[in-house]
Image (cartoon, rainbow, N blue to C red; front, side, top):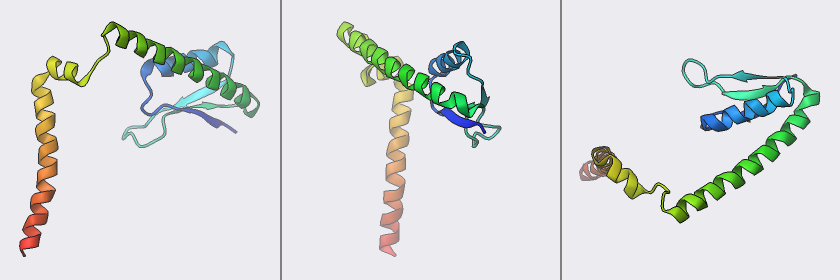
Length: 122
C-alpha cells in the first residue's frame, strides 16, 4: 500500500524538483498527486512500496537537514552582503501595490469595527 512521503502544498518548485530527483536517483518507486481542479486535494509524493518507504524517509530527512543548512547559510551570506530582501525593498519596488495592500488591511479592520459600533447603537 502506498504511503505519503512528502506533501507538496506551499513547497517551492526547486525543493519539489530536488526531492523528485532524489527519489529517481535512488530508484525509489513513487507517484505524485496534484491538488486537483479546485485545489482541495492533497498534492504529494507517495512511495508505492512499503519496503522502500523507510529508505525514502531517511533520504528525505537527510536532504531536508542539508537544505535547511544551505538556505540558512545563503540567508546569512545575503544579509552580510546587504542583498537580503526587506519590507522596505518590497515597498520601493512596487509602492502602488504596497499602498493598496495597506488600504485593504485598513478597510478590513475598519468595516467590522464600524459594524459593531452600528449594532451597539441599536
